[in-house]
Length: 95
Image (cartoon, rainbow, N blue to C red; front, side, top):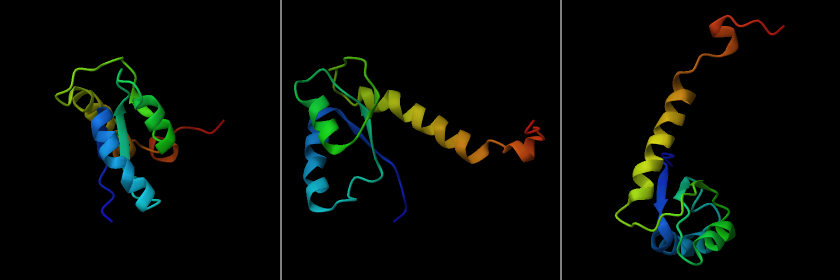
């Protein structure tokens, strides 16, 4: 209800969230795949869930390393969305 984004980090985390997609069609609506890991099956699982990864760096480090990188991308995107001026506000001509 609050539209808070949730970052999935790695295969185990994604596998844990997968049953929710089966139980509730919009259960993962605010979920973002931080990255696709090098672990077997992770890419296929993300594809099955319809979650494109933000990063594809071949990582298999653990410790939330994918989410640590992805959270800054998400924060930057949210700042741009919230603070960027429209063409009209910035005085940009449509010509």
